[in-house]
Amino acid sequence: MNYLGLVLGIITLFIIGLGFLWVIRGEYYLGFLWWPYFMGLGISLVTISLFVPSLWASAILGIFGASLVWGSTELKEQAVRAELGWFPFNPRPKPNPPLARIIKKWPAPHL
Image 1 (cartoon, one colour):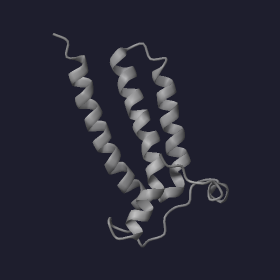
Image 2: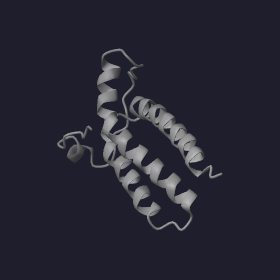
Image 3: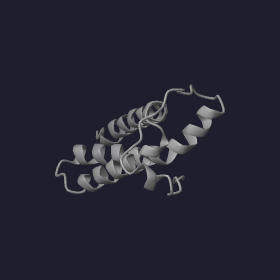
Image 4: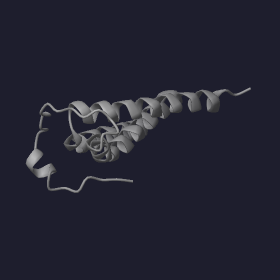
């Protein structure tokens, strides 16, 4: 029997579950303006996964990278949900990312 699909499915479920947590905590502590950095990291991981010779490592890197890309599109929506009171709102000032003035001019992506 081949357990590759089953194990990758379980790993994918775990990574997606972690994705929900990091989006909530990432917006709480950093704010939504960090989305380009998370998206860049996700795209980099997906690209790196293309060149990794191990099937397992390549699959896990690709799944994790795709989860980061998805999460970067959710940061703005998470900020709105926190303002509506659906999630905890951090009243303390959040650190601005590098190039924050430029990032503020970009529309936040969403899927």
